[in-house]
Amino acid sequence: MSRHRKVALVGNPNAGKSALFNALTGARQKIANYPGVTVERKAGRMVLPNGEPVELVDLPGSYGLDPTSPDEEVTSQVVLGEFPGEQAPDVIVLVIDASNLEQHLVFAQEIIALGKPVVVALNMLDLAERDGLALDPPALQEALGVPVVPTVAVRRRGLDDLAAAIASVETLEYSPRPKLTLTERRVEAQAIAQGTILSETRTRRLHSRLDTVLLHPWLGPVILFALLFVIFQAVFAWATPFADALEGAIAGVSVFVQDVMPSGLVRDFITEGVLAGVGSVVVFLPQIVILFFFILVMEASGYMARAAFLMDRMMQSVGLSGRSFIPLLSSFACAIPGIMATRSIADPRDRLTTILIAPLMTCSARLPVYAVIIAAFIPNRTVGGGIGLQGLVLFGLYVAGILGAMIVALFLRRSLTSGAASGFIMEMPKYQLPRPGDLLIGLWQRAWIFLRRAGTIIFVVTVVLWLLLSFPKAGPGENQVDASIAGQLANGLAVVVEPIGFNRDMALSLIPAMAAREVAVSSLATTYAVEAETEDAEAVALGDQLRARWTLPMALAFLAWFVFAPQCMSTIAVTRRETNGWKWPAFMLLYLFGLAYIFAGITYWSATALGL
Image 1 (cartoon, one colour):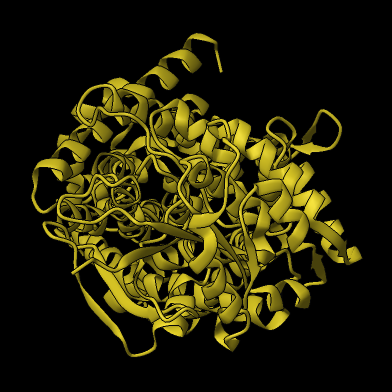
Image 2 (cartoon, rainbow, N blue to C red):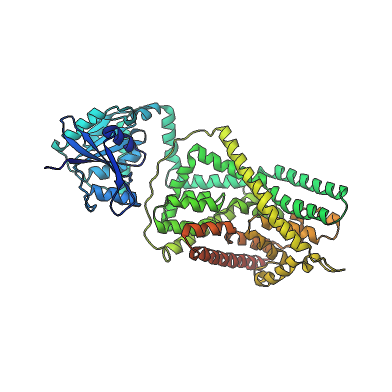
């Protein structure tokens, strides 16, 4: 008995293959796994107009025949007839998203160049028309040299024409097509797509022109970094009035508590532990909100995906791909969701490298530390045409973290996680104006997370620190911090960090900062509040305290430490879970502490030598 012909549905992810498969096979389908792998195999039976039954197979979505994931490897091997025990397809139905024609034509050319019988299903034409795009299928057919059938799978439009094309495709004669490089296919895809478009709306043309500029290989990165620069300028310029108001309100509450409560342990706990400690972190809520406002706008507008595409070239230079950009970008909020987001990276070496460098992205927990030190030691003035110096320094710290991550990634990819960089292709979302309601919800969620963190982790750690700073009580003429348990611990650590310019108070702040980075600020505020000898001294702002006790080289070294120092212990725990052991978390701790110590020392020694 002769076997049934095999027809394979092939295309990029989200092209509508599954909908087309279901429409063509109905209930006549079976789902299993390919032998030896966890990739799902969907096969069904369809009958052609001439009564011939054929086997229809829905292959996993793929961006190319050079696989970068298990799904793509299965598709490549089946299409090329190299999968063990799997029959090579007699006909390939190439499913293309009509609303994203240019992107899908890159893979289409690679499939057509194989010389196998191919039918193109120009799918989702209704969505293209909804977006104001009118296409010319005959022009596309002439350009590709294979039959093109317009379809709308979810509405069962074009299915009969597609079945007829499958039945007759093997009798057609094909002109040989040269095999092109990826770059050549992209150029050709753009030309074919332009030749297929009959008309488009003004909005769609505008979006296309925006992509021409924003995705330009040289101009695009310049625009991206200029945008990031503006963001960090705004973090200081816009937040200052709100932060000052919060700081004044907390100081007012502290004075009120001192006036209405008798002196004693409870009052000291409220003023020194809660208000001076936790309050010193809460005042940076405006900076957090402004930073996330810009991030949410970039995501909602569709620009964030384009930023990932632009960063692919930079990622490729250090052995990664643009797939790592989104997890790393998430790490600017918090390294924990960033590390968890690496699950989308198929290549295990890419994923491990991304996990190991994620803590070098400057998370929002570092922002209070940066903000208080910059505000205390960097003059609030402009340089070079109205550019705020404080915002410029903040931008430099973020850039330092990014560059450090790229250098570490390059080292890892050439040693511990060596291997070729994987490819990266992604769908570009449509541009759209962010909805104010969605932005407000997103900002509220971020603000609540920050405040909840201040009210739980930071509160508990600050209270514990206050207790360690307050007991045992100092004798007459003795400094309270030196007499305390925390002070004795800090004096021991200070011996280790003294060569890089850290004093006892700085050493003490590093210990609770392992619970949450922001606690470094509350630790300093609590320490100075406990150490104060008079009530008036307690009311002195933290920035003024720092300027009186630290030198500029010490402050710069402290900033350099927090650029490279390990994240909180929660991040280490998540790393252990994602890597299934303590080997890589231990390595992460070791190399990050090493970088922090070295660069803090270099910063301190250099600044001292320059007489700063």
